[in-house]
Length: 81
Figure 1 (cartoon, rainbow, N blue to C red):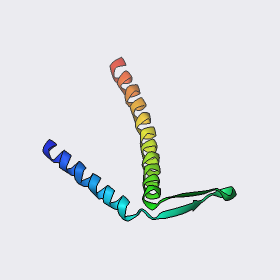
Figure 2 (figure 1 turned 30 degrees about the horizontal axis):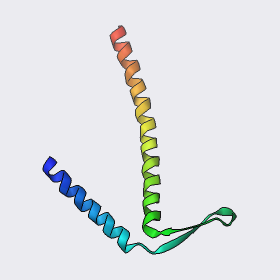
Figure 3 (figure 1 turned 45 degrees about the vertical axis):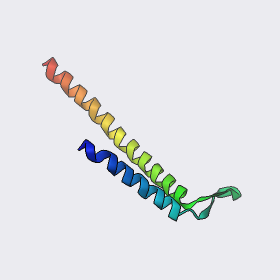
Figure 4 (figure 1 turned 45 degrees about the horizontal axis):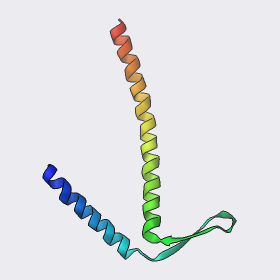
């Protein structure tokens, strides 16, 4: 399994580099109050993916923390009896 990890990482990296090269056109993001941001399309897509990933991780971590707290409580009850 470890023998496949490095080639998979290299392939994913090369695909991302190719994606960035093919989507290097500049786009303009317009915000409120006349603010604008000129950046490559690939960076906008990467930023949107990163924000979505962060929101997903935060949503899952809240659930995991709640579950761990419940497990601790149940273990105390089990060992306390």
